[in-house]
Length: 487
Image 1 (cartoon, rainbow, N blue to C red):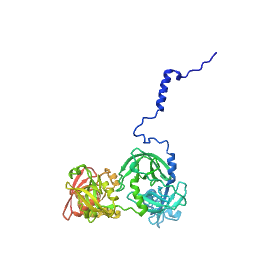
Image 2 (cartoon, rainbow, N blue to C red):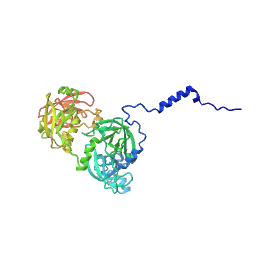
Image 3 (tube, rainbow, N blue to C red):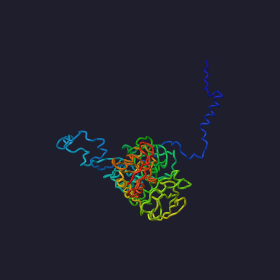
Image 4 (cartoon, one colour):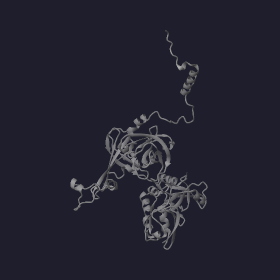
C-alpha cells in the first residue's frame, strides 16, 4: 500500500494566491509621508535610561522645625491626652524626654528629592522646595557614593535651585535640550526618586505646553503623563535623545497622570545666573496689570483684543517715572508683542536692569510710545505691598487677602478668576451692616477693577473720610451685588 503525502491547503492555487498577496502587502514598507521623522513607538527606552542614569542624583535633606511643626502635630498629636499634674505626661515618664511636638524643642524633618548633574565640576540642579531652609544637603550618585552639598543659589519664583558637591572622580553631566522644540504628544522620560525609590524611570508623553497652575508669576509648565510622584521633584524630564527638556516640579494631588516640569527655555537663564552670581535678578516696571477680556478690549478700542491693562502704577517706580498711567493698555515691550499680562511679566523680567526699554501702549484709543528705565525686581518689597491690605481696610470693618489658587479652590472659583477675597468682617462694623460677608469676592470698587491686593490698596488710599465706596461683589452664596460702605 502506497502512502501519498497529505497536501497542505497552500497547495490550492486560489488560496496560495491570496496568502501570497497578503504576505507581500505585510512586508512592503509603509507609505512615505511628511511625518516619517516622528518616532511614534520607540523600540525600547533601555539605552536612553542606561546613558542618563549616571547624571541623575538622589537628594536628602535635614531641616529643623520648631516643635515638630504643624505636620507632625497633625499626624501624631499627643496620644496620651492632657499632661498629668506636675507638667509631665506619660511619654516623658517612660522615655525621659519630651514629646517631639513640644513647642520648646526642635524636630529634625527629613525629606527626599532628585536632581541632575549639569557640570563635571559638581554643579547639580534641583527644585528650591527640595532644599529650602535645609540644615544639611546630601547627594547620592547612581553608584551609591555620597557627598555633602553646598547651596550655590536658589530662585523661589521658578522653584529652581543650584547646589554643588566636590567629587573625587569624573562626573557624567546631562545635556540641556530645547523645550521650545517639544510637540504635544511627543515621548518623554522622567528619572528620579519617587518615594525614595532611587533611579526610577517612567515614560509618557507631553500632554500640554505653557500650563499656568498658579504657582508664581513665571508659570509656563510642560504637562506630562509620565508618572511623577513625591521625590521626583528636581529630577530631569528627557526627550528621546537623552537631553533635559524640563525639570520635574509639581503634581496635582488629586489627579493621576498629571505632572508638571519647568521647561528649559525658562530654566537655562535662571541656572546660568545662579551659577555665575548666586542669585537671579529680574527687571521691574512697577505696575499692576491684568489680561484684556473681550469686553475690555472693546471698551478701550483695542482692535486685536490683545495686551495688558494697567490697573495700578506704583508711585516713584519706573513706570511712574516713565509716564505710564492707570488704564493704559500695553501692547508691546522691548520690540516684542504683548498679548497677555504674562507676556509682559516675562519680557520685563528678562530685560536688562537700568536699560531704557520702549513700551508701546494705547491710551484713550491712541497709540503711544514711552521709554522706561527698568529697575530691579524686589520680591520682598512686592510681598510686603500685598500684605498691606490687611491693615488698610481695617477701619471699614473688613480685611481682604489675595486670591491664591488654594483659596480659589476652596471657594469653588474658576482658576482664572480675579479679585480680592474678604477674609474678615467685623460683626459690628459698617461692612457687616451693608451685607458684606467672609468669602465674598470684591471685583470692583467705584467701577475700578480690583484684580489683586495692589489695586485694592490703591483705591482705598485714594478715598477720603465720608467717601462712599461702591463694591461690586461676587457673593459666596452666588450672584453679584453692589455693596455701599461709607468711610
